[in-house]
Image (cartoon, rainbow, N blue to C red):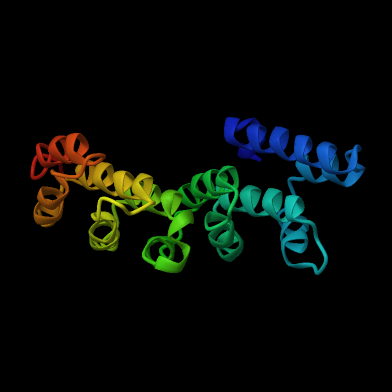
Amino acid sequence: MEYAEDPEFCSMIDRLRDEIENASGTVPDAFEQLAETTDPEGLHHVLTAPGQPLWAREIAAYALGVTGDPRAFEALVLLLNHRDPERCVTAAHALTRLGDPRTARAAAALATNELRVAYALLPIRLLATLRAPESVPALITVLERRLPADDPHWRVGLACVEGLGALGDTRARPTLEAALPHPRFGAAAEASLGRLGTLH
């Protein structure tokens, strides 16, 4: 399958192998077998069978996702909101490749869930990449919540500022203007305002 030579897949396999070695001291044969599996039905079985370790579900979800199998969608969305940012990065990459029409709505729901704002960075970046109808409203909503200068999740707000600039939608102008005085957002907001209406 096409993902076997994918740098993101190889990076994920290396990361997971290190995780397993650090946790248990040895990598099971099942790991190497799964990393080489090209059978979609076998991958789907791993994704749905009870008692599978997280590393197995991540490999199966990624492999199915990048080959366009919609059965990976739910697992990838869960990984997109994981506390481990590296898993979020991997999931976002696979979701982009999957091209499922539900992805933007799911990413917007994750990004705007204030209870999970600490894990919103990758859903926000994914929304900017997808350029979906849900992208601009979700990024505006999240950025408005991050405008107080004492908000601890400034990296999330900065990703919104940058994402809105990349999207180039003039609906973002009032919120980006409100971000100009912010000590961490000001320069990026000015740059993003300069891009509004110039992108298609």
